[in-house]
Image 1 (spheres, one colour):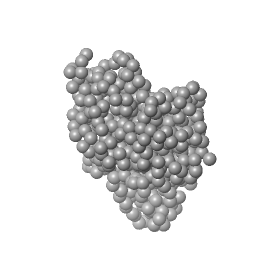
Image 2: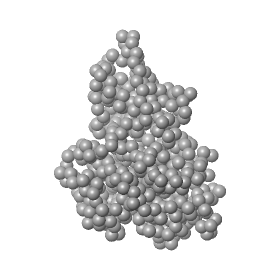
Image 3: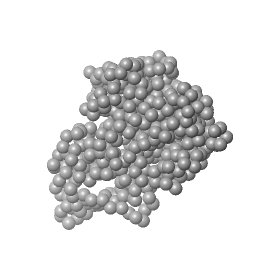
Image 4: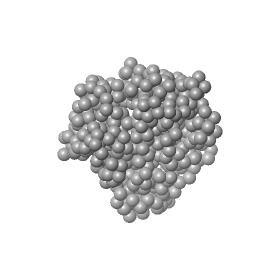
Length: 448
């Protein structure tokens, strides 16, 4: 089958391989900032107990030159992609993108770092390919529509596989035909269900997507066969995953003008838990500062637009991992402690005094509001609190909180380790092969 029978897939592939975001200073700067944020999350996540479990299970003892972030170990590139992708997402502290409705960087950068073990690359090339991979992932998200996520797919995994393959195809200067096959091979491995939220399998989605994207591009480069029309085929990606909500033209329209990393841009997380819980976290911290005491509260109601709490699948968590997906717990911890720390979301049992307040909370939906979509103006939460003295208070949060500069987040997430202190400034200025090699060496260390 020739590419002429697949005009949309070919146009998508052509846009990916022909792009040059290095000429867009805003895109490259946003990408470097996002990479600093991702590395903060990954270095911290590398120390998580389950990251070591995964590394052993997938064969991190295999020989190879690909680095494991936050550890003085090297391994096979496909293994490194899995482990680094997992480490980047295991704390649920990594960035999100509205068009994806998921986490792009923790899939794309691990695939690119794994390739850096096999090729001589410049830092600028890696950053540019990250921008292109994110663009592809975000535009596929816009094209597949809202039902993909709402019906149970985890977009980080399903879209991320294609985004990672796109980034690798761009970095390796694949032909449009080769890229189309790589994208199709990625699409046939596109998987991941939201039913895994609250389990170790959720961050595994990021790792498996990074690995599958890298493998897909490798197979296509080796002339391994695959359908070149995954967007055009009548039983293709949209037919299988969009549930009638697809808008195929969104895949390529206005490509890179502006780049998706610039607008709508990434949200860099302020708190190490599910993004959908962040508005109630900010409200809880604000009320802590105002002096509201937990024992003064009779009941709490969170009101969301339809679909806005779809990711918040836990109301009564038993441990901190489950608690990442519980707005009831997140609000309680934020109000009582005045902050949300990594230790609020460890695998230890949740603290009873936090759950005592969480048990007084309930959720409802404003069915008159627009259903939450990739448009950030459709996201809000209204907090109504009934106090034991008979009075009430109401607060509202629109959009998502986030951090503009992850430098402090990086220092906190890496516990101020001097082994990694140079990384933020290096990432913001790196351009050459020597710069990239220096970054890889800094990442390939144990914390001290």
